[in-house]
Length: 336
Image (cartoon, rainbow, N blue to C red; front, side, top):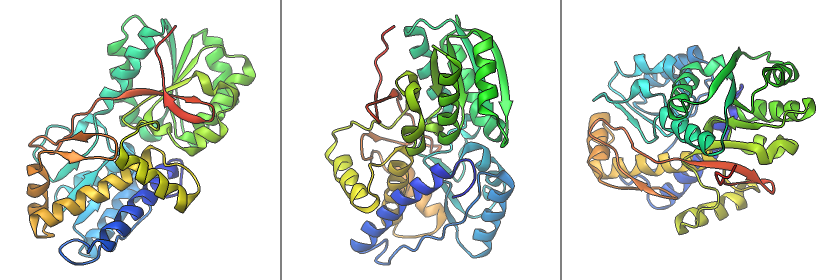
């Protein structure tokens, strides 16, 4: 809820809260209202672990990690040793895939996002790449980078910079320009990505800026500046989707928050709905029973598309490439 990735938590909690309000208005789960307990991990793995310990200490055994892969890595080893069920719609690090455990992932692997972006870079004829990574989310960034480079082996990696909280966006832009690359791949939160985009425009960078799904928020929309039309990122969220379920949610979100939802808000809503569905199907709030009920559900109807989980509780999804057009997110076209 605070820190460099507050966009994920704040906007996700908006969607989650909307889902909980609807569920309670419909009679709740098992005939009782759901009451969420929210703690802030500030995108820090140590604080995420502290929050997890506090929740378990309070007897709360169903936990949603609506956070980054880097922060979640601090809490997951502890949580998987507890009698608890952990669900996520955002932790996409492939390190947690393929295990029969109590961690259910309603999200595709980070390598999927990387390979989607790599295929787009190939279609756009890109040859030289510079990489900028926020090392506070390095596991997420590294797996996505692997997917990108594997899908676009002809890309020459010109250089890589790893940055932290005190990143100098103008200096990073000057470094990227000096590399002579025709594309920059940056794994940053939305506001930092927007600041980098503005800095790249100031130094005269004429290439494209590739981002991770982490950046897809209102900050990027509001502050990307003139480089916005040259920004591309992979996503499993389509802001122009015409699914009636999404359109109803979009209107409710506008009424409550005076703006359209972004990826994190949609995912927060969906994870709340999926959780309540599992509790009601299990007729129990015991973690093991809820897990079994969720895994047994053959089809989850999201706001935009349907998908299922495998026996390990991992989702398989397809991603698309999103850009910014006329101040809004829109599907991109791979035209050189």
